[in-house]
Amino acid sequence: MGSLQTRHLQDVLEISHRALACETMDELQQEALTSMESVIGASSSVYSHITETERTFQFREGKQRGVPPDAMARWCDSYHRQDPFIHRYLACLSTSPCNVVVSGEVIPHREYVASRFYNEFLKPQAIYHVMIIGLNPARGSPFGVFGLHRSPREKAFSATEVATANMLAPCLKGAVERITARETVAAGVALSSKRVPESESGDGLLLHQRLAEFGLSRRERDVVSLLYKGLTSLSIAEQLHISVRTVNNHLRTIFEKAGVHNRTSLIYQLSH
Image: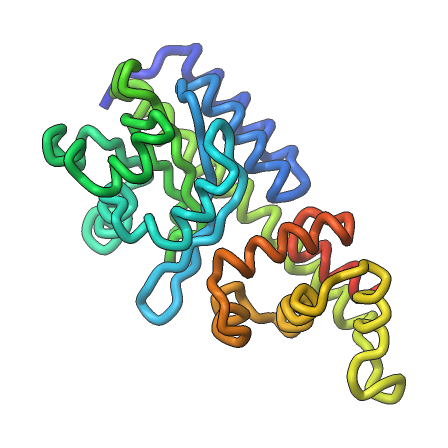
């Protein structure tokens, strides 16, 4: 492990303070990505939500910086299956859990540059060096992962940079858990106090009124109706016979039309 100097510890504390000051997941992701690009050093960065269902992991795109607009959607939809770095991270969870995985420790150069994942997905984005920073709870499955990237022209992530990331991981995990807990409580209070009364309308008059106000398309209304019932993107995709990527694309459009930034805020809007 690389040795951390005072300035590295100060950087970790500064990022931690900024992360804990964030009020929403969108704000936290953007702050964390921007800060880690600067402190650890990266030309691009991404965040993905992780959900474990029936012994498999589902990925949902979060914020991204410096990569093509559809990069995370493509990774979440299919390319994560070929990603040797996320495979290593998830494989280690059951044996020797770690917060940080770097590409140089996972796959030999010759095998790496010959892989389909590198040539089809990473190389067009000028990505070679990869660092994964996972958010691991004390018990249970990981709920998120950050990815930092460098080009082939840049140096590999150093031991000191890995050590810095290892110190940051639990701080970021705590910030995410804090926001998630607050949003869960807020959503529960909103739904319990503003749920559509059955006597008002059997088909949810308030919900339909809100959907009409937002100017959503028929398919977007279908997505929102299922989201309102508590379904995940994967479940919505299965119900509507479309891909998870398409569901997430619909959600981005819906958020824009409703003037919100996440699912919790959307449900709150629908309930008022």
